[in-house]
Image 1 (cartoon, rainbow, N blue to C red):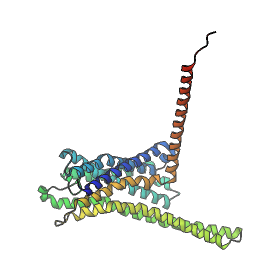
Image 2 (image 1 turned 30 degrees about the horizontal axis):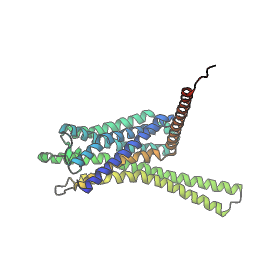
Image 3 (image 1 turned 90 degrees about the vertical axis):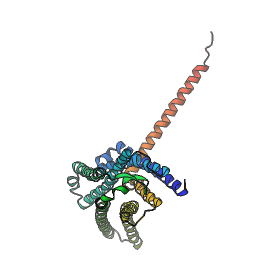
Length: 343
């Protein structure tokens, strides 16, 4: 085993562990908080978390075995199932992120009519649409016989075998449509929605700060230092909003674009993809599953409060059980050592 292969194996294991723990933590917060369950975005979060967990259980171990063995670790039939799962789950995850961005856009642009425009029924319809969209590509891939082991990425994914070169035009068309219908479509929706949200958020921050300064001027003779602090706080709020939007869009581009660009470039007849680079781009896609929980949930105050409450409750129960156990042990010892006196 070479050093690059060993490092890639360690990277896959680390990503899988973080992905499993973080997404299970999100599900724990979802089950323990009625407030999170009552919000419509929780439906999209739940769909995204389940998708990432399945991707961690099915596809990450398969890629790890592909790197370790240097060949197809399964039979052809099982590998086709893993390939079907990868196409379906990766597309569904992207569409879930796009749905979350649309939800934020609706909440910011139409705050007074949000619950009429984005109800539970609408959320379930969006999730059902993302499932159908994902199934369309994954079933097409399976029926056309383009699901198999791809040595360049050490994984079971969309692949055209060498003896099927007569299907090359159809395979190229499918690959281009697949990546434009998943990655490019979701990237467009993310950029459109979040940039609109950022624009509205900045205008709201500016309006609030103007009203605050005008109110202070009416109440008291405002000191220049107070006005300066207001302007500094305004800049901080703008930076926080910009930082969040950059994380949403930037993490999507950073994790998915290398793999998508590599797959599209590989369609050219004279291009050979280096195996280590192909596996690394696949690892970046897996890394998105481990970061989604932090980007959309665990870094938010709402989820942190629920998580702290769960941990505190667990520690209290553990401390109480230890106290009861210790008391009962003391009583047992006392009874064992007790020798009645004979009158």
